Image (cartoon, rainbow, N blue to C red; front, top):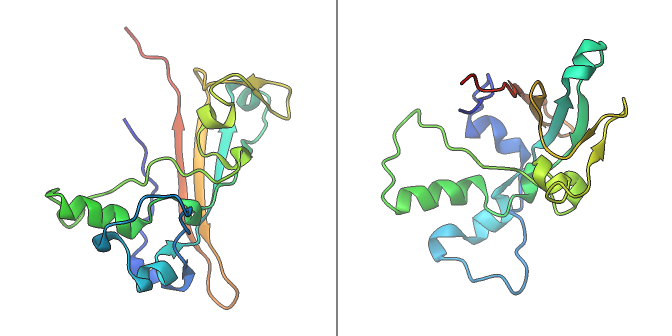
Length: 173
């Protein structure tokens, strides 16, 4: 089961927010020519500021809003959106109009920019402490996780992606 944002944003609408693709480390493997080009290096990244929010059952009960626990940047993705699409298409994936592709977890270079609680808590060994004093190593029943994305740049209208929200519900046996 997964959640999907309520908005679809076209590549054309994202054009003002494109910039350099993430620079690879000097010791990284050489990319296939199908996955990079000078144009991709200059414009293959997309500046989307993300927020990961967590609201526990206790926070909800006490009338507390969800808390931002991470702010990763989509431009930090190891593989660009265009590289992911090219990889799928060049390997025989039967892509069709309307198919949705997922980027997977978006995490920054620093641990506090992790888009995943497992990364944020160092595998559960270092819990995060929420402003109400609750701690989380892993998600618990009743927790609600929300993701928000926003592109903004001076001189252009900001583009939001809506909020993608899911609640952890104990499976009934």
